[in-house]
Image 1 (cartoon, rainbow, N blue to C red):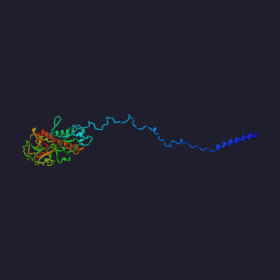
Image 2 (cartoon, helix red, strand yellow):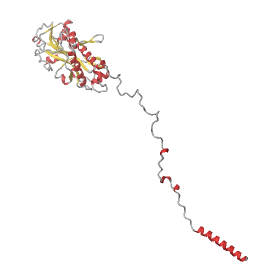
Image 3 (cartoon, rainbow, N blue to C red):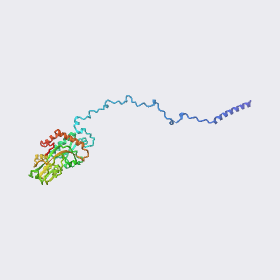
Amino acid sequence: MLVRKRLALVGVVALLTGACAGTTATPTPAPTPAPTATPAAATPAPTPAPTSSPAPATPSPTAMVTPSPTPVPATPSPTPVPSPTAAATVCSTVDTTGTDLLANICKAGTIVVGTDPNYAPQSFQNPDGSWQGFDVDTANLIAQKLGVTVTFFAPDFTIVVAGSWADRFDISVGSVTITAVRSTALNFSTPYYYTPAQMSATTASGITTLDGLAGKTICVGKQTTYQDWLNGTLTLVGSPPPATPPANVTVQALKTDNSCPQAVARNDFQGWLTSSTTLAGALAAGAPFVAIGAPVFYEALAVATDKAGSKDPTTLMTAIDTILTDAHADGTLTASSQQWFGGLDLTTVVTP
């Protein structure tokens, strides 16, 4: 009995031992990783649900950009519309950011005018520094119509007609005669007046005819058409042919025309050739000269600009032409001529 129980116990133990050995001997396969263990980077991130997205960029009622009444109008304000007075000047319509001569003058608010301080009655400077004369009035008219002020400059006439002014002045309003030679260096406007060139002799010389000056000394202003005529080199443009000068004359050229009567006391010349207007002014002031014969030529005088200037004068010259044409038509130039030239109207073409 006892042996039977022991045998039964041994059998149970053997069964239990075999069962345990079977379990550990057979490898159990590793469990397959769960989907949640897969790295996040290998699986695209899910698209956020609309409910979790930021609110659309729809402005709230308080943030909506509703144009206010003030900035809405696209119609120009009446303020920048040019007034009739402003429109009457050339510069009121000029773009001053431009680079030409007219734009530069309008931007500066002044035009620098070259003229002669000793050429009465065309131009002269008073002891107080003020300027007067026919050319001065013409320059002031141009400035007024442009809408700027005038600054006068007094270059030698030789500099004016030679050109290459180095931008020291904008225009010349100094009774510059239009000639073929000068046209190579200068731009000319339409003529604003016309003068006869009148020969005269000193009363001390006793000469009364043009031929009587043959072989004599005649005084003129430097680089003038009067000097050119005596030297036989005058080439007028828009004027009738000149007369023939007296033979074998000696030319004495001084700084300006009026330097001749101012130097007459030296008694080193017998004749003086200048414009009829300048001679008339000198005679009225008591200068010891007498007019001889008819005018030797007639010349057209114009405003000039420098072809060698750094700024293009084309639009300025167009404006000046319009101003002078209007001043001829409305009688402004005629009235000025009659004021300065003893009642004479020299603003129309004069022929012999």
